[in-house]
Image (cartoon, rainbow, N blue to C red; front, side, top):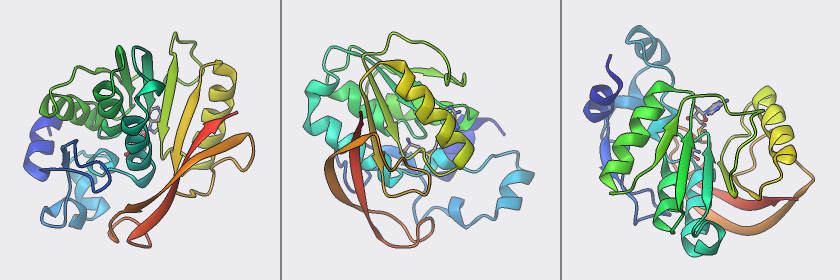
Length: 209
Ligand SMILES: C[S@@+](CC[C@H](N)C(=O)[O-])C[C@H]1O[C@@H](n2cnc3c(N)ncnc32)[C@H](O)[C@@H]1O
């Protein structure tokens, strides 16, 4: 199915609880997306819709960036694993000169474009796997990406080697690094039982040291 049509048919324009100033095409309890089984989605040619949810790590990081615009103001920013584009949109709203949202999922890329449009900001989008690449980014933002060991290990090694300032939002995922980080803030993020094991997740924003 064509990604943009699928997104528009299966989501509602909603503000994530911690970031009321940004509206995204998200699955909600009133929209059937998350009630579909994985097999149903696979039959429709749709990968798991990570882009349809504002993950706790992304919500905390977007809130932090909006409240501390100096982190991105006038800078060339990368939002890695952008999903819905929430963090990328927050960076642009906070005054970033240029934001690249990277996500390998075609549906996420389409969602980022629709969500950027809905919030009237310009975001560049790439579906390339940028891990391992050099980039002229002056600020790198990473929301909720430490949920799988191989991905988290590859990602953190690359981020450490990049040389750019890196901020991460994380609600205590299993493969989030235990050292080499400094906590900057904690948020209590409202999420949904359809995806998480509790309704409120305490979520940190960290600087990679
Ligand atoms: C848990 S979601 C986080 C989305 C968003 N950052 C947030 O916090 O709401 C993880 C996202 O990472 C993307 N992803 C996974 N591996 C990736 C890779 N190697 N490069 C870029 N994106 C990737 C997935 O497609 C998915 O959209």
